[in-house]
Image 1 (cartoon, rainbow over the protein chains, first blue to last red):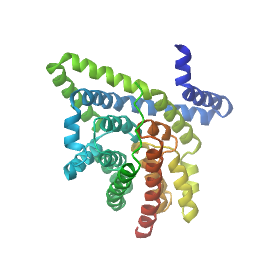
Image 2: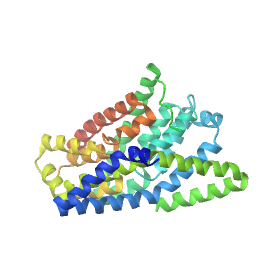
Image 3: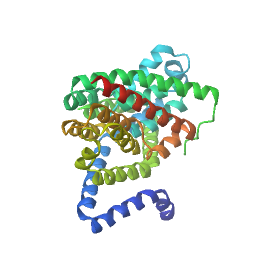
Image 4: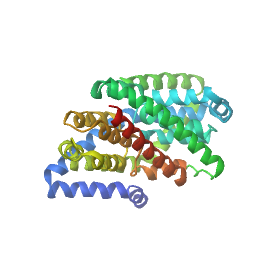
Length: 175
Length: 158
């Protein structure tokens, strides 16, 4: 039990050890790192619970047929728009989107829509756009937004074609 | 603000779900916990790594590397540093803003920002568990190419 826990958290324990060592070797760097990590953990704990609860609800309530109808292959523009809005409305860094994308795939959403969702989550989140305008200026934000819109769809289309050409079995979700 | 909205939405849906079917709701919460616990080790590793990285590469260091007249080399450094990991926007934007104000070019800043948010080598194993290796690598590679192209154009325009 404890052994498996150690194995699962091996990487974390190693990195944590490095950080502890830094505190003794280079106190300023080590302490800064710990402070930053602490802030990030708090930040993560603030937005992750609702995301995972939503994920659980999605898994239980939305059945395969519904997901396929709205976001599956052939859901067309409406499916893409829905994926885009879902991704843009979310909060949290991109790696929090991966489990959500996993459930969407399992329920039969098309790869195109899954990757549009991922792309939107990474760059076109509404609160982030306002934040970007405030910190970097409107021109910078607007130009980047236009590029991002093109980029997100382009990347999603290429990945979708790749999946169709080489339909690799998706990795099974670990239980 | 958006976090509060997220909590409210979740609470409303959870109450609705609980009213409709208690058993299913309990099942949903169990699933939520399970998938959270499943990726917690990777999440924690990523967070510690980001902390270490930002502690070593503080604002002054990054600004020096990407500062005024750093040109193509600055672009390359921006892309390399930005691609190491995925950093949430609330950290990335203030960092990018301080880069701009201390004299980094628009192109370098855009490159740093775009790769920070879309390309992550450290998070690649996590991504692989959901998409498979091939797709995860391809997505990161495409996002990288896209970041380079769009940032160079942006740097020329602005």
